Amino acid sequence: MGTKQQKRRQARRAARLAREQRLAELRPSVPPAPEPLTVGAGWSARSLAVALVAAYLLGNVEPDRDMSAGRWFFLALGASAWAFTVGRLAAWRIVADADGVLLRSFLQVRRLPWDDIRDVWLRRDGLLEFSAGTDEPVRVGGFVPPLLHRRLRIPTTGRRTADLLALMARHPELRPTHGAEAGPPTVMWSLGAVGLLLVDWFLVG
Image (tube, rainbow, N blue to C red; front, side):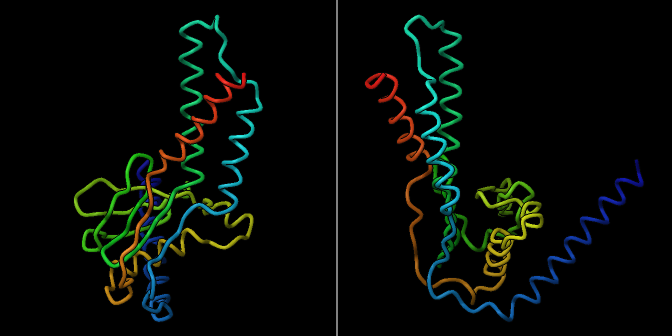
């Protein structure tokens, strides 16, 4: 057991050293950002969100007047999970501006000031994790996981974004000089999907 833990520590240490070397090599080629940096859901994620909406609306998953309370509960639970997924896929966004990073999540748009950001890295699940002061790490995003990047040989957008944000946090001269907005939280898009679902259930039938 001790050997496995030691190997994991060594692997984490090697990954940190490799990342620091990558950031050091990237730093000279990164110019100051003339405009706020905005990264969010791309066409593939939005297309998937639209496909999920269409599949649910056409899937004949509808309430019945004679349904029990238990079936109503599970139907509502499934619809809530579906709406959350649709909103997250279609509308997540990260915006870096002069004052910090705006993170659009489900119920809020949170700002992390530059001085509070210690580090940013891409997780295995495709989320960006922000280490900010004494708070719990903040996770947001929807990038393709690194494992799929390697297998599909597609550009590592998530890692590139994490590296740029980490460099901006460390080097103030790289940060944008203008402010920006991130728009409403993703729950607004989820509520839109729920509205379509309710129309289908109770008006269209």
